[in-house]
Image 1 (cartoon, rainbow, N blue to C red):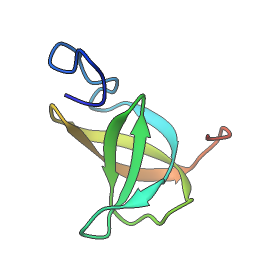
Image 2 (cartoon, rainbow, N blue to C red):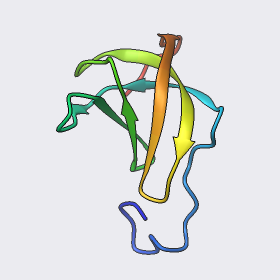
Image 3 (cartoon, rainbow, N blue to C red):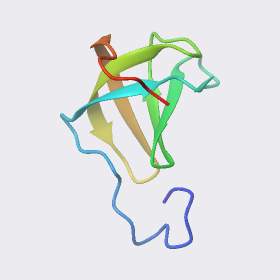
Image 4 (cartoon, rainbow, N blue to C red):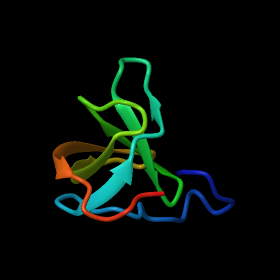
Length: 78
């Protein structure tokens, strides 16, 4: 259920346990970093806008995923 016309039929583009490099695009209302993977929102605590980090996905829901920082990004991000 994320930004697309078939939002009810699509699976999240991330899996629990997956590691990815992301760039923090915004802060959520509780101050957590927000990144996106193919339009899917990921919430990453302890980050700031423009941080480029390697994350590990810890939980995936229909509309949002949660992750923790495991290090610095090793590839150039967005």
